[in-house]
Image 1 (cartoon, rainbow, N blue to C red):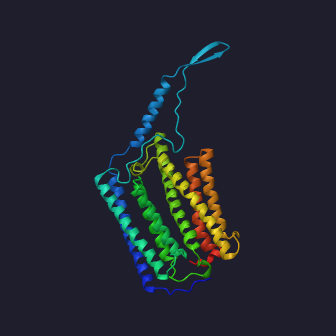
Image 2: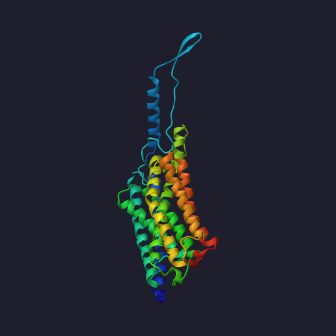
Image 3: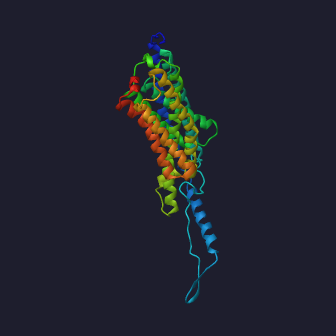
Length: 365
């Protein structure tokens, strides 16, 4: 039975809009504070990675210097050869180098701006979350009935996950700048091109599955985003470590930034753990969507574009996790596969909703 329509509270809807724009202003201040954190933090000394790699090479050389000679028997007798000097390089993402001190670089001034940036990010999160709640109250339903509302909730959950990791004493300060930047981009797209007036849903969406299925999809996407951000930063840090291992000198700016980040091995592990932790919930999201489809449309699976690309995303992340667990994929190959999987999720959100037609197109833009 379809519930009676509830009149839209235009006043609350307008308050929601004001709160969203206010959160964007505070996120912008947080962005500048993060920039200041990196600039002032970069004044500290760098070279921890280079020193560690140099020490590793020295240890390797010392280990081979004392190696016994090799005897080679031939027709003319026995020749004694020195064992060749072998320089080994760790597998991608597994170099034994220390993590960087974080975005602030261990400087007092950089740390001050970093704490200001985190405080502003937390304030913007609270304001944006209030905007999402006001949007929900204006129509008395879940605030993710269209792409505009989905985008608002997505960025709110992403920032909330970041702040939760900080509260758990995880070293993720380095994620702040890229997070705030992409959140501003997401909100800018939402208010410019995706905005939809607060209104009631079509009958097919009047179900408790809207709260279950879509909320888990939003949470999974937000956490997948954090994993993808870790993979992107891993690629930069791995290239930096490779240059140092080959004896090349990177630019001063690149060095000052890369030395702030965790090691490539830590970033690789971070991305893997994040993706592995949320993958079971993404599996549940697809199952919940199929159950809802059975209730709403009389079939559990109809190869709708949204269903197809949700499954493609699941397969991509399953391949990533399987490759890590069985084939021992680490480093750049795993990072590329993780980014491909997240690209499938992004296409499923933007591309499928805007460019392809299907039963999910009722949500509108």
